[in-house]
Image 1 (cartoon, rainbow, N blue to C red):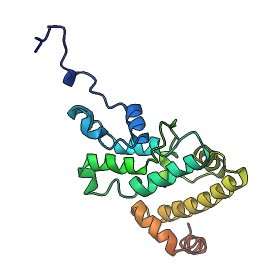
Image 2: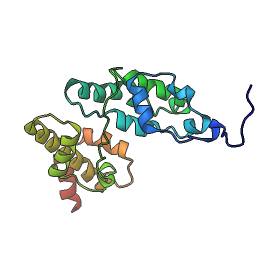
Image 3: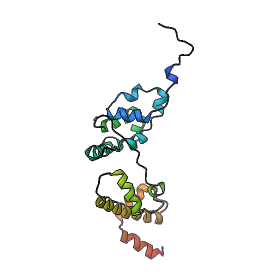
Length: 196
């Protein structure tokens, strides 16, 4: 066995960053063992949410793009943040691998989020902003469909926003539920009767 030189560096103390792009490449290959081969420090830097967001969108478009969005949601997103699953990052990794079609390296791209004020129901949504956002996510979808989806999202979002304004103490999940029980006419009637 050769003696270590003073210039040799123990590899456990080098390359301690979690490389997002290497991880995406491993997911594209369905490399279930990738997480277990990471150094302990790299495992601590594994952020499933970021990988979900990046993995779900590929630039190729068409069926491959649709597959990644739907499969990532079905195989990973639905249960990724369950209180029991969050305690097992290797299981989270395997869920992400299960979402991949294993079709080889893809070009994943970052899609910006809706603004925090919209997702937190602190401001109303505007059709143009939502339409631009949907166009980035659903590349290749015809403009009419995007516009229709944006109009419906905006209508539903603004209905929830109005309910949140009436009941500011409610959690977003409660507002979501309440929005399915009362229609826009009910909210308008309440506002009329309360002078709001």
